[in-house]
Amino acid sequence: MTSTDMELEMIATLPVSVEEEGKITVSARKFLDIVRALPGNATISLNAKDNKAVVKAGKSRFSLSTLPSDDFPDSEGANYIDEISLPQSALKSLLDETSFAMASQDVRYYLNGLLLEREETTLRAVATDGHRLAMGSLTTANPVAEKNSVIVPRKAIIELGRLLNETDDDVKLAFSNQQIKVELPDIHFTSKLIDGQFPNYERVLPLGGDKEVLAERDELKQALSRAAILSNDKHRSVRINLDTDQLKATVTNQEQESAEEEISVDYKGSPLEIAFNNAYLLDLLNAIPDEKVKILFTDETSSALVTPADQKFERQYVVMPMRL
Image 1: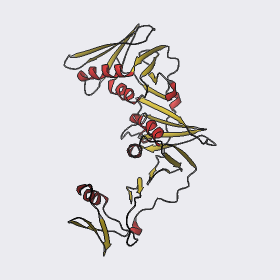
Image 2: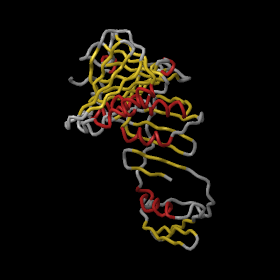
Image 3: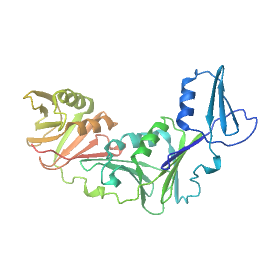
Image 4: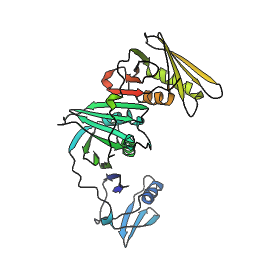
């Protein structure tokens, strides 16, 4: 079965009993709704004749209009210049832990997607909406001759995240100048790429941060989540105060209400007061795969760099501060 919206294409195969080979085109939405409405153990038969497709299951019968299969768009013919294979679980983790920072409907269209970059044996994923950045990488078996990158649209990344599972079964990625193709067992997924120049993410990474915080991820996440209950829906800012081995998060709103949370952290630097979008902090804390997080600050006007405490995870997150 093949479906496309001219940007994404998915081909799925499954074993069936075929009495006569053939091809038809039917409404995807109507066919899906019919199959969904039938009992889970129903046996479905499909018969095409005279511009109609008849779907039967038990005592149910549906007659659908068809279109000529030869008129269906064909995406084959792309010249793929780079191919890699890796475990599904590794790719799923990489996408889940970076794609949340993608922009949505931004006029800077190149931000409405995920950068996938190949360099030697590294596959790197980078997403940013201009206020935050998420970057992760993993090591692949086969090196690439020269550095290259593509921008995969947001819609394709979200759909791919649904298709991947937590197994070590291989998934194959193939890149051309216009498309990315993903091959899974029984499913082939193709997407057009975004034609644009992704920002130089290396220039965004803060350098020289001398104020280091080491915190328990869940404890910090829960404190920020509780404080967010009283946050302003529009700005969602949280004020962070750091002192020796202590982090205090304060939220106020237009009704003059406030929430204050204190947690113990490992911090030996000078006192610091800085504000962030609380939702951005919670997003990255939900994505980080480690039990502890390391946060590097420079001052109250500079972006913070957040990483897992254990660098084996190869994840980096940048979040810009808000005005105090």
